[in-house]
Image 1 (cartoon, rainbow, N blue to C red):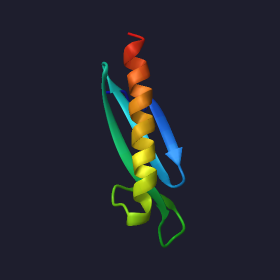
Image 2: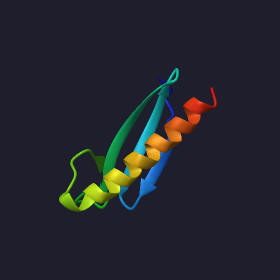
Image 3: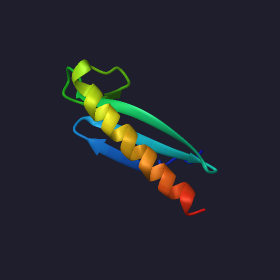
Image 4: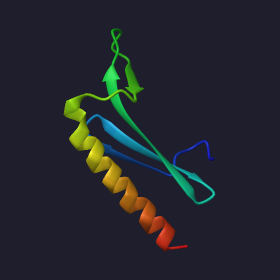
Length: 72
């Protein structure tokens, strides 16, 4: 797997990070938040209010990956 993601899709505080491991794609979905010190962090723990954005970034990730696979 590359050290850099193949693609990122952001919607609000939700991000889908797509990784390319020799044509086998994986996706991490995270939510950004600020900690007590005001620094930005990411977590895989999601609130109910995040779920619609999770569904949307997952769908967009699937579309992006499908397009990559169709060009091979």
